[in-house]
Image (tube, rainbow, N blue to C red; front, side, top):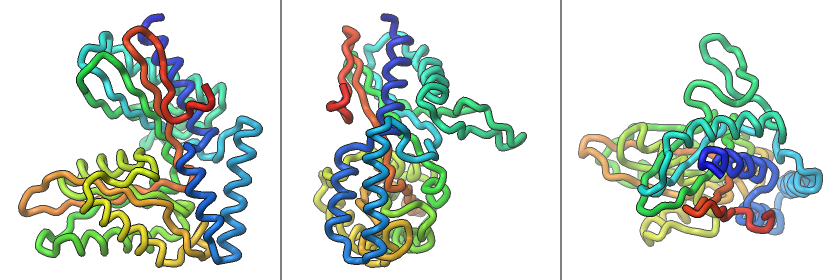
Length: 294
């Protein structure tokens, strides 16, 4: 099978997996939150979320009516041929998925306010490229919901105030977001680089499984501190109060200019959708996040 058709089929499958079946680490975190929640209202909300997840899988329907803006992450081996055909294949997969799964059409021209009707348009689906050694191709899709996207935040902090100003920035972002991102959320936090770099790596941090802390012990400690502080806000499930406001916090960083301290917080709602597959040079495909469905 030619690479373009293979990528299209795999990307279509990933979109279907992502919008219907949450990754196991997210489901386990939600079950744990339900078991440990002390607020009766919060527990009721978490039960509704878990019931919703079960029904989505049973009826093979999207777990949320907002199937998001489609974002792809492409990790391409340097020896992979015909990389110029990948983008169009991902666009075709998005159009197919919109019609066949179906996905809600969420791509709107900001000038004319016209919806394309198929989740495609200028720079959408958005594709993040990374070239790595080897001859395999790894595709990840993240359908990003509008509610959580609306509260994503970038800021230029005061360099001299150090890491404490980052902590303040993150917790204030959580408090100001309140119920808008449909908590319990997952936070991708980034510092350094530039304004655009910080948000880019903060959003990519959302792809890391919840049971995988940052391998840097100092960053892992910061993740735990932010997780505990965010859950002390009492915002709770769906903003109705409780001990579970975030399911996890993932922190990443880039080196920064001495005069700048960029920071970003990317929110993902409880429906933290992602799916990944690897295409090998012989055409075989390995689905990495949803092995039980293959």
